[in-house]
Image (cartoon, rainbow, N blue to C red):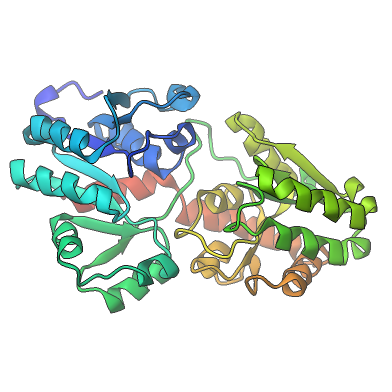
Length: 371
């Protein structure tokens, strides 16, 4: 914490919707931006919202205060802002959701000189559904001093479509004080890894599994490892899948939800390839930065941020969305490529240069405060 209290910027990050902050959000951009504003820029930072049940990751973002409201309603948030607005230099909001509108209005009403940063968490599908000419939406956007999205493609798309300036703030990687270490390709294994919510409609995990099944016999020394919670609705599909491909139980491993950050990082370090089979993503997912910074070559579907996730296919490949054969083609091409080690080194260099969260927040701080 900075010693000169008078010079400290007061920062509040308000939870979106009417939900509390989730534990995992403390180590994503939602929590990393506030944490690094505290750690590297001496800000007094609070993450405000309804109370959740588990904040084990709070130990990793020491210095950020969690402040709990009686509930997550818009009314309660507005009352909080009314009481504290004059002392808040920066209000951080997530998403251009209607539940954020009244919070932004109240903040600018009671502190016209205060700044609002909103991260859109945007993809083109969601943004196309917004009536941007609707007066309440326009009023909200006009309240915001910095409007950002984590993907360059969506930034460019929105800047062509909307009258507001949209900037690019990537979902970066932060090593929590560990020294950056270039991963050893020699220690990597023949693993294709994915991390996320398995079996949701958005993640399209079934496409990934069918794609691997289609080429597994051609790369028998490779494994597909899936980290994350399996949706209960997806389990019957999995049972049918393994009844159709019983031999694949030796090549496909579900390793469960990974809560220990060191364990998760070790999984990235082991894998040669990281994959997503999503039908859409909000910008560039956090897992992409984590994977690249561990030297994983990326195999992703053509989400908005696919070129950013693969550095224009210099350290990965893209496949058509919802296309089993095309994703299988990508897996086979990468797994048998003589250039995979070269691409792995490129992935690390690109990740280090493009997704370093400390550099990202330094630039954001300068953009917000001109310092």
